[in-house]
Length: 424
Ligand SMILES: [Zn+2]
Image (cartoon, rainbow, N blue to C red; front, side):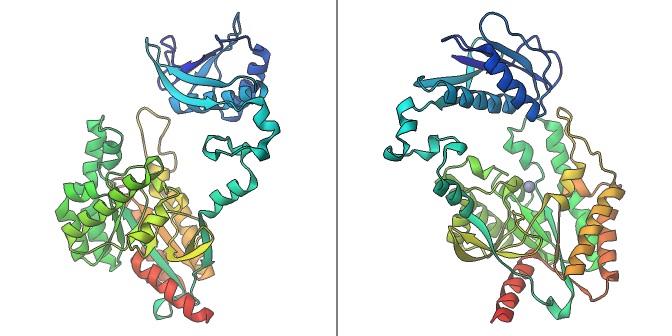
């Protein structure tokens, strides 16, 4: 049995101990050490201490439980390759208390199965990625893929480029999704409603610019008036999950149920059925595209295979769904988020964030493409930050050839219709 977990002797905040030992059979400790040393260095883990006495044992400091799980899985894979005769091995975590928590189970294929791989039925879910046959990694890559680029020669009214502003009204939902343990972080979410959205709406009105708001259903149910005000002002509301859940952890029926319920909730509050989708935390599952087609969405804005719009492909077939790319480089959260108990701090000053966004904007102008900017009401609206958006709007209007400010749904539709026409 192998154990991975934390140790009470580890005092540093946000650092847990990795403690692995082999108790079920003799294993060459230098083999483990060589491998672990390489992998831990590769992951950038601070390795505090090696203890190699008696039974093979690795001891060191890692940043998180997630890292422990990944390391356990990797070490298990190495041993599986080297010790093919072992039928099964279980990896478990101990949190320093009496009962261990299982992190991962790893099944080692018998020696013979490797030699006669072609004759054996392949259960690819149980295989490691380096064991996949070519058809398997091709299948996974082709599940959701970028198809033809949708960049019209000119945008609406002959504008040279298009600007799409997005505000993801997550409010309290990230903290709720994580179990609502921090009242302080819930309050930060409330700032998004009390301060953030009103400041954004008045700024957009001042400049006469439309925008898209991606709203988790729980945010909308907490603040229905906010959503009605947004729609009344002419902006778009798109689906952004139920409670900012992570799609890749959901079974297909659960993911379908949550997207459908979110659509119904938003429509029930605003009277408008959304046509756009943005996956919470950019977590698009292998089933998400299939569900978006099934539920009648026109476009998605979760992925970044291009700077410009493109048609989404599923299993090698065009879907007719437009991807309006979102990218972390044009996302305020990347630069400004802060977490007390993680090494997450806003290191980039607002002036540098403005510089990055400005260069992305000028690049879109130069290519006659799209500039999409994603922000969060509880992040971008502080008194020291909101000026960034205003300056971007003003700067876009100074660039020659003209700019089209539009909602994501309008841009997706225009890009699809006008690129298709020109290609004919
Ligand atoms: Zn979000």
